[in-house]
Image (cartoon, rainbow, N blue to C red; front, side, top):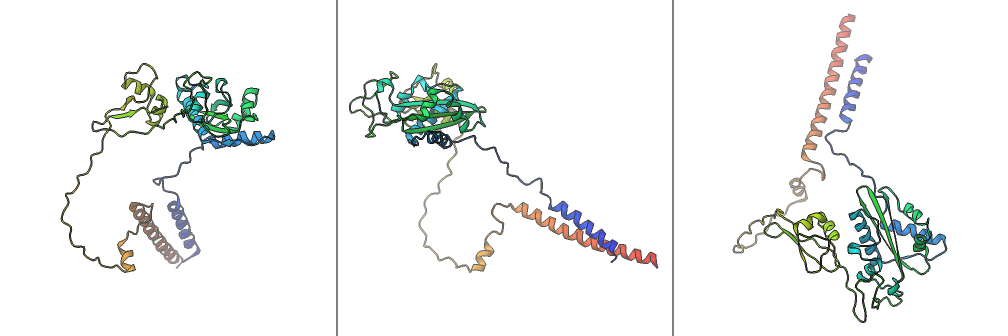
Length: 337
């Protein structure tokens, strides 16, 4: 076979190999979504970095403050507002007390606590929030106050905006719930030996036989928490229950959804008399391999079949290319003769 025939075969093989080696458009590709702007821990770390630059001890993370800050961030995201008041107008001190935080200080003056909130584009990082708070004395004092020792942070995103919240406070030395008759918010306060009730998280209820979903309101739960948990809207819950405001109370039963499809339970086979167990044949390792599926995990049978077809087609094209080259050589030799 002449060099021209070899060149022709080489070009054909190269073109076919390139075409078959290119990614198949039918195969799914992983789409990477942009990462979330910052997490609550990122926000805590940014605040503690600022405290370290002032030579102050780092804030300790309080699980209760993490919960209250996140709840406020969720509330801001759900309402699209920037406010220190929570659902129903509840203030920071009462929110901390309701969550069971052992707040130190004179509760009639609010106790030792502070809260910072801000928001911006959803790509805004936690460091930018801290920089913004550093620009004025009250917000800066929340982050570098020597009288506060614990922190919680919350981050929420809605409609392309991110909402950042930090709650900083100082607990009582004994870590016990506070004893006071009145809080600065004028709401429910705790006195004597009465312990504050903990806000009960919202749990999703299953549909009943009619396909309706009901929720029993527990202590501390609000319409916005229930709407977020059930992935619905506050206005829809109010419409279904003929509510004219956002006030709900423990023990209320709310209709959340109607007409939810209830999966039909498969019929249970009636019990039969137990049969005498029989021994099963022991399979050799070779038999076990033969009886197992040969399809790799994560690859469909159709994909394997398609790849095999492509391989056979490539082999056939290469063989035809060599045959064509041989015929081309013979024709060239015949012309010379």
